[in-house]
Length: 377
Image (tube, rainbow, N blue to C red; front, side, top):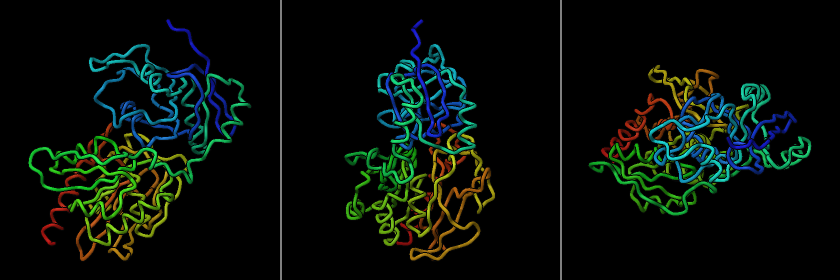
């Protein structure tokens, strides 16, 4: 049995937890958030939306299925740190090629295990998401706290450029090509263009610095903005780019960060949630149909828009389409012009990797919207 290495976790309000190293040894800092999913840790850890965040798993037993080479949602692990209570001593899955702590160590991700994650989660629910440090080097709480207080906050953080692709690439349509989609990578998960391709979409994944001229050069049937990390209010380029897309009448679909950018482009504002929504069991109501979906979430910011009111904008009539049933947070927006849908977004993750597939119909809605606008062009 490998010897344990002591580790310490210190929150910015001074709350301290002592445990053992899990993954790489060293020191790391970020925003402490908790994720409630009981499965899908590999997809969570490789989701670029978690950049600069230390993720606390509320499920007590983590690592049972190890790590494989098929379920990554990007090219690397993006979390700043990982916190679990009871790590599996060995992987138990025919798909596993290595263990979770081996993969964390290989990518230099510092984590901690053997702490009371229930107490930590309750603390974050009561006090809100906050900065945190994990260390196997400096085990003095006061010394580590002074470093935590020097770490940058998530509010005001502009991170999309750090996680976006450097070069455009194309995911070809599966079967017959029906549409061309320009997808702005603000932290995209690989499952999203994969699902679009199954709907006959040829997806051009583009860097976050892409210009409107570069988008129109593709002659797209639709434009998509992805999920991503950071404060949406800092994404001035993406907001301006989307306004040009909407002014041109190109159909738009946004997910998560892309929904917040949509709200800002339409003239609404965004705000930081106390502790955010992160998990795969969040109930959301579609206000147009009354249908309730169980959905996957990962967001710490939300759009502030009036529910039940249609707002005139220079691009058409905007309204809230979905709300979260736990706290009534805006979870979706739609934009109509001349009675026809020209844009919509959801704050949650219909690609659901991992998570339920209740919201998979939204890719059909995107296809239907593009077909409608093509027919009326």
